[in-house]
Length: 130
Image (cartoon, rainbow, N blue to C red; front, side):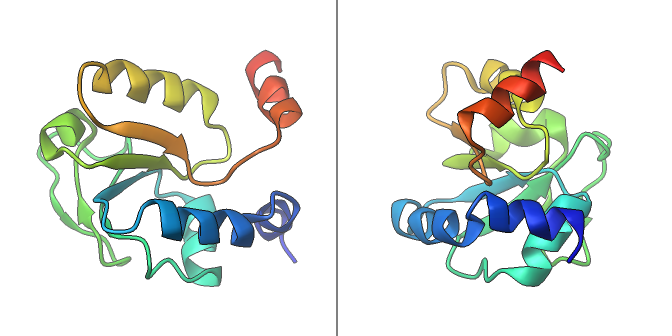
């Protein structure tokens, strides 16, 4: 098993996914982060019960729209707030910095920001200070 899959098992992602499926039913979800970590999640877990309508990542330029081979619409970072999802789920290994940035740009909106993978508190603390 590779490192990403080991982390997903360690963080009990299947259980987290089941909770998200119930909590976010009929909510418009944008995934932030389309790197290897998200690809591992997409290829190894059933995300079909989440209403994922688009993805975004810092690598998408302002004018880059379309869809990925993953089948989701691309929303450039600067257009996230205009796109107006109900939730932005962060699908990266390191979430703290991205969470802070996304909370800042969504301030004053109804958009909620949360990690896709729920890490234990101590792992988040290490991420902040290491």
